[in-house]
Amino acid sequence: MKRIYNFSAGPSILPEAVLKQAQEDMLDWQGTGMSVMEMSHRGKHFSAIAAELETDLRELMGIPDNYKVLFMQGGATGQFSFIPMNILRGNTKACYINTGAWSTKAIKDAGRFCDVIVSATSEQGGFKTIPDPSSWTIDTDAAYLHYTSNETIHGVEFPYIPDSKGLPLVSDMSSNILSRPVDVSQFGLIYAGTQKNMGPAGVTVVIVRDDLIGTVDKKLPDVFNYAVQDKDKSMLNTPASYNWYLVGLVLKWLKSLGGIAAVESKNIAKSARLYQAIDQSSLFSNPVDPAFRSRMNVPFILSNPDLDKTFLAEAEAKGLAELKGHRSVGGMRASIYNAMPDEGVDALIDFMKTFEKTYG
Image (cartoon, rainbow, N blue to C red; front, side, top):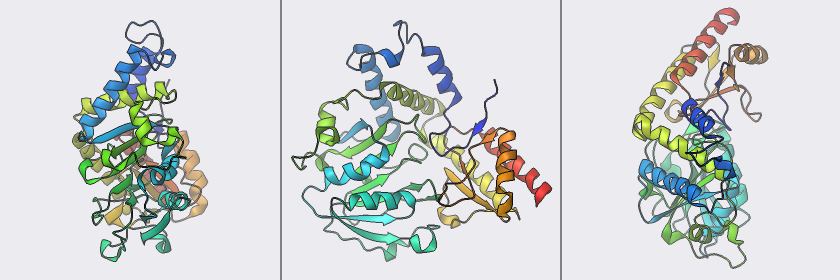
């Protein structure tokens, strides 16, 4: 068996060491005689897995004690609605920064529950940059300020934590969580689907400051209520237990590498090599403002779009898969999350150079 280099934006590549550990544990987890996916989520074995999962995440991210850690379902898309349901706390306004497709979706869903103030947007320019903070209009009477730290589709990433002017800061970190250190204490709420940088699809991590939860409309279903989910340890309903276990393995893998700071250094080096190859090319180009290029998702286009299908077909034949850009923007996209090894990025660069010699 030969594994390919999987550049999918999500579900995405998983560390090979994690997959091998899961394979080893599949039929018999630690001498229990059963698979994790067969265990009762209320039993002692899975309770230990769940406790380690939260402990490891708190350690890796330096999560303060006054923050709740929830493991929910519904993806970041579900959180687009759950967030205003839970933390408006009687307010009728929330501020949002619009820097791409996922920000746009979050704004749309939040608009069902409150008046959304778009404090800044880069839509007019095609979501290729982040608006200058001096131009932002933040209503300090709003409930919170929301931004998407990394736009998976457009390849735009915030290199800094925005100034929320005193509002609780909320961030969708689905595609760059655990890829760089962040000061959690600067946020009111962080959320992320795990299928890009933390594990398989099916788990959504929510890290929320405890003073922001508990004041909700009585009609809010318990399964969407952060306070209720916290009280029930994210097990109000049967959780995606096997996926929790796999996320836990990814966290232990990160710890074995030296933690988030160590993996950030690798991410900086990987993305720098790929962007350099693109910038030095006459066939490939990246449309994003260099100051805000994503380390995780690298979109690129060919000067001759007629070559797109050829590029994708020949890349796949070389074991370089899932490079097609999102349908809304076209072109190519290489997602190079934590689990993408150096060899995968270097193989892509070598292929691009060879392709340009042939067709450029």
